[in-house]
Every structure is written in structure tokens, then in C-alpha cells.
Image 1 (cartoon, rainbow, N blue to C red):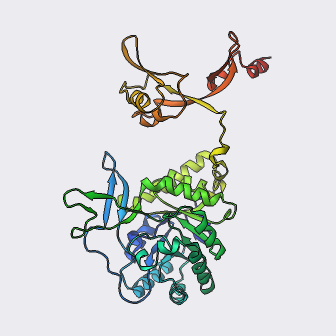
Image 2 (cartoon, rainbow, N blue to C red):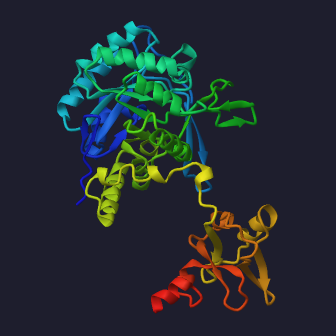
Image 3 (cartoon, one colour):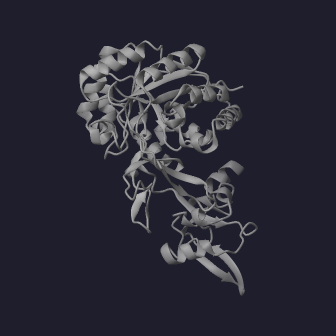
Length: 436
């Protein structure tokens, strides 16, 4: 049986699935329910300094992008950090950690960019027995306008400075949460490393306006006729998150820097992809908010089953295995050839592949044959863009088949052949040699 236990920068948890800093981790009640459901850890919703209370809006806080089946694809929020008193949060953190010592307890923090507030709040969190702190340098709305959150995360010099302060004033590992609202994610990651941070976590939410109400012309969610940019998350941001994680993992200056992966993780497969790109833990928010805490059962059992099938005993057995296969475009093999192939037994004759290829691609699909509605790929025109694969509504109906270059015995011309058949084709010199 696969062993899902993790040890991320000294933070031990029974599995790599942590709840990200967000509404699901805002109080003891939620966190205890999460642990009962099987989550390996939590990042407590971001705490701020003592002082005037944080005031959240009392109207809608979320906007969403839905698929055709109403499945949630992306979620936008305008909620701020915790609006509960600091001391209440600290008491609950201490209590929960004492009652659940085997679970990861990380506390997210955001205070003004001065050394004293960081020193003070770190001392307070230290007393709770928490395992680590996460510095929230990613929140793109509300707090960034106050000189915190993403406004710090967009300036590498500030990241390095605050990380260094925190390492001086706490015994706990320091994780720096990075904002995706930046041109090159490698620079803030390098700054965090220079400041002595033990790890980085990414991505935080993407600054966004989800939609416009065309009746009152207000951004959604609308508060008394006005709206604001918020933070975008959910399955739709996963490709952005994977790319940014990969950029850090393969950067020479940050190679080996521990990463906690965040961004659109909805199932065990998503988690495995982040781990394959070097993440030592993964953080989930939108999926839990959509389906409830028990979704972690599918995540843990699915990951364990896949690991068993692949022969991976621990997370470390496949962690980072994809990093070496991420490269720059100029290093891709331009001699690799593939062609689209339509499985006529699965084809429902909808013509979507033909329309896409004929109108917007390479006119490589023939529409009819012998007067019947029939779709077939013209190999000489196909450039393997695989647009037809992506627009086809039937899974595996259209596939990309690797080709290899050989010599036609009759004409002497170089031709591309179906790789699966060419490996045993009598004109293949390697096949002839094997037969001999």
C-alpha cells in the first residue's frame, strides 16, 4: 500500500493534502471538521495585527464562471483576511494543534511592511505551537491597496527583506506565498530564497473582474451598484499554477527550493501533477468550497491507488519526475511527427472536427466519402496541431499517432508511416534486421 505521509520542511502530515488559507480555515469548527474528514493539514486563514478590526463586505463576495453543465470552473472573491479578533484565532489554533498533533498547522500572516509588526505577530503565533507560518504576499485585492499582500509580493526586494525579518524572529519554518500577478515568477522566488525562506507556496489568486452585469453595468459581485477586482481561483487557474511551479522548479537559482503547490487542485490527478513538478505538499480551497471537506477521501484513495498501480511506495518516489521534461521551445524535437487518426467506430458524424480544421486550421479533414457523411484525415495536409482532438465531443475518437520516416520500397521516396505499424513493416530496416 502506498504511504502518503509527507515531511515538508519539517512539517509532518499523514498526507500531502492541506486546506489553503481561505474561508474553510477561518475557525476551529471548520478546521476540526476538516481534520475529521481526513485532511493532512491546514493553512489557517490569514491573521493581521491587533488594532482596528477588518471589515468585510456584507453583500455578495463571490462571482463565478460555470461550464455548460453548471460545473464551477472559476471563482472570484473580494473577501479580505480574517475579520475575527486575533486573540480568538490564536486561542483556537493552539487548541486545535494540541488536539490534532499529527496534522500540519500552518498560520498565514499579513501585517504592514515594517519589522516590528512582524516580530510581534510571530511571537504570538510561536506560542500556539503551530508548525510553520506562511507569509501572504499574494492577496490581490483589498489588502494590496493598503500596502500589503500582492503589493509586497510584486517587489522582490520587499520579499527578501520581510523573509529575513521573519527568519530572525521565529523558530518556525517560513513559507512565502507568491502572487501570480507578476511578469516572471522566478524573481520573487529567488528573493524569498535569498531572504532565508524555507519554502514558497503558489499560486495565490489572480487579479480579475469575473463579469459585468449588463443591466446596471456593475462588475460582479455587485455591492450597491459598484464592484471591484477580486482574486480568481478554481480549476481554470491550474495551467497557470503548473507553469509557475515548473518555472521555479527548473530555475538554476531556486532548484531544490521546497514548493507547496496551489491552484485549481480538484482531484488526486491534479495533485499528482503538482507533485511530479516537485511540490512537497498541495493546498486546496475551491474544490472544498464546492464539494465539501469529504472530497479529500477521493483525493487520498485515488492517489494511493494510482501509486500502487505505478509501484510508487512514497510521494518521494515520483516527486519532481516531470521537472526534467519541461524545456524551452527551442529544444523541442522538430523531427518528431504525428498525425491525427479518426476511429470510425466511435465517430458520431457531428462534423465538429471538420469545421474546426476547415475554417480555422489546415484543411486536413475530408468531409464525405461515396456520398455518405464521413470524416477522414488527409495525412499530407495534417500538421498534427491536434485541434480536432480537442474539439471532438467523443473521448478518444480522434488520437494523435506518432509517425516515423522511412523509404517507400516501390518509389524510393521518403515517407511518413504510422509508427505502430512501421516498427514491424517489411520496409523498415530495423524490422528486417530483427527478422534476420
